Picture 1 (cartoon, rainbow, N blue to C red):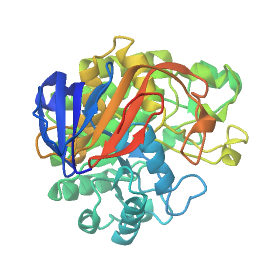
Picture 2: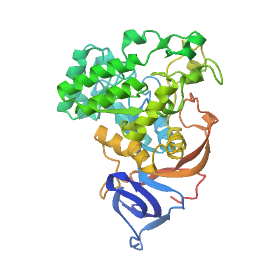
Picture 3: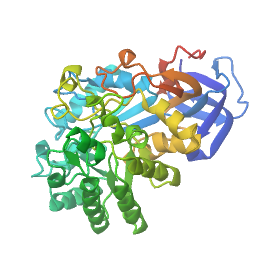
Length: 437
């Protein structure tokens, strides 16, 4: 259907100052009008939004690993997009640490072709800062931009040297692209596998101090101030890093940051309980102590944190089913994020729903300079319909992702996704809701 209307739902659209009952008219894959009691012509299909559901701009996950090309046993673009729309995300931005690395137009084009074939969520490739992510020579940033990349990063590794980061910031500014940084001082991290603290020590695990993250963040924030480049701190986990971001913003540096649900919910206590050495709680950066977790929540509440992203990092079960030291870092996140955010942020009173929409939609669109984050007239009809009161039990076995590595299996949460609409087409509808899309 080319012209239809979502009638009578609660619309939360912070970019346009809306939070109330509105109709949303969709025409030709775009938002035609948002208003109250819109007239209904004979050729318009009417979809009544059940009471309690919330219509908002489509959610954007600005940090995912789709693994293709090269690691299709973990995830493909198609399975990752299926997981995304089931999780309420209309768009995802995928990291370049594939095989081969996304450091050239050929790999970028391949990813975009696979995304078009899947025809589910929008996919925004992120290119590598350095060729092969080796930290030696800059990738051709202009070529990556022209091919469709929206940002650059060496995610999985920090940008190797201060000079390379300076050049990356200078070049990316020419192309209006942020540099996304995995902050990690390599000599401090060394061969660490968990947060440096009591719980890692008790289990005999090598530690990674929070300062390994914050020291690199301070370097890069200083370089952003020097170059006037745009810097985004990925998957922030340490309270010292949050202090660094606040310091940079106070000085006018163009710096933003994201936090994952696992870093604002879990702590390093999970290294030993409920199951010791569970590799599903091994991620990089690692789960930190309670003071860090509480700092992330405070940053989300006071506006210091700009976005929530999942760092969706699927791994095959055989890769995770090994000794803790040998297991790869990372967990899946696309299909759990919304329920975790609604339960632990909105229902817990940390932020109102409008702020959550900013964190998951408005700000990611702004940081990446991509369409979305708004239900303004003429905007793409990318919408997420939330069910804040839905009772959800997370089931790893039922996930659409090709991998199941999550520490949240079996968690019972309040809040979920009712439907996901991309370009005016319903690409996911939750069977628990009576929504006739």
